Length: 138
Image 1 (spheres, rainbow, N blue to C red):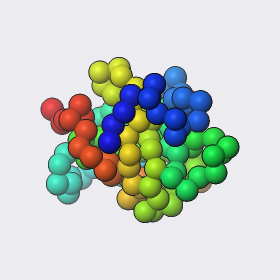
Image 2 (cartoon, one colour):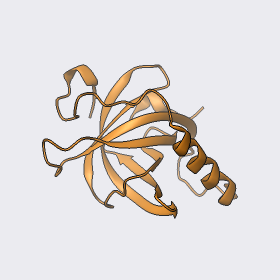
Image 3 (tube, one colour):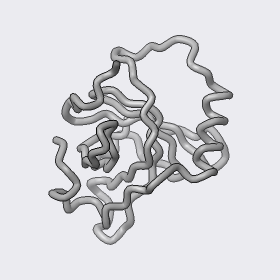
């Protein structure tokens, strides 16, 4: 389900970050340099989509802040990200992010992968519970 953030109470204080901080940019560069894409084995290719995002797990304490994510790429069903906070594989929740159209949305999702790639940084993938047509690969 996708809802505009104005109608979503699950996320804490609309915590979208305005831009990637320098350390996140450096971590993404290190990831791309160390592991350049050789063969795309994905069922649906993703397009580059870089934006700051926030994740709130379904089982997270109501007072806990959202976890900062930095999206790398996306398609209508999945999103790649990096984060300084490890997420549990299989964890369900909501990701708040800005679409290429500029609209901020809250999308129900499940963490499919989250693994360390650099000291203090993790890369991962989320699966959206419903198709997000605004993220159609060009």
